Length: 396
Image (cartoon, rainbow, N blue to C red; front, side):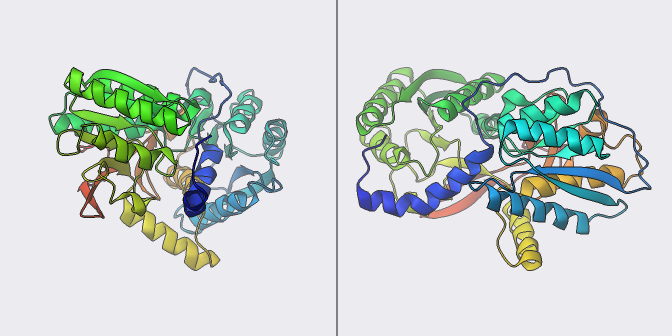
């Protein structure tokens, strides 16, 4: 654990709460085996008739009940905005348990569901996918764990790979050639490191070294020193940090890395997670000029406003995943496609328009989302490279 002074811990509670909520659907410590394959699974439908969609959410899970409600409401908002398709949405409670998720997935299929939206956590998505595989029913899960994706399982959550690819492509376009990775020695950190290494390789950028830190003041301090030495000895021009902005290690890194001789005007700082969730970081030495990625904020704000107008409260940060999944189903069915729920249709190259911009599902069960590249300048967030509006332009 970090040795954090009580006033700092108290100040970080709201932001940490947000990240804890986001991690409900994020990287899971259990190594999952993807269903594999891809293919063209999915039942044929009559698009002129109501399409039965099952929404699996942990309604009775005390830790996730509010998330479940927000997901359901976002799905219903999407239905109200559809054109040319009628959705019969039926909600099933997983109670946050993988075994229950599998049982509810089978129940939903027995009730006539043609596609499953949810569940929330990676383990539950995995089990629901297994239960639905024999019936060739596709599952659009709310996880962002790529290890469970494949076969009849598609994940809607934003992935580290997608973010790393966007940022690394931007780095290449700006003439960057070599990086040092700073990552936490835990599951999210390992996932992040792997994503950055893959993105670097795909974009022709050299990884000078990867420096991991243990969750302690001493560990972060030692790693900051090692990373600074690696940047200087390896002539790296970029330092890529996996650490979540709300983690207590981030302010330490943004202070200690510059103090060890790698100032932002000498090396490009890049964050794998959004820095804008912590405006108090903006004044730190390493934050000035740092890059990070985020969804199209105009579209995101528009969704938040429509949701608040409809339900009288702000949506949970994950609510947009349910809206996106329902919108994709509705967009395909609205075209009159009898194959709207098959893997072939769901993975169309042009993708769909979601709450944070365009996105598409990939044949391997993961997803690709349009992202903007932003930076911090004069204690303000500034968009450097807007999110592309289609998959035919730059930014992918």
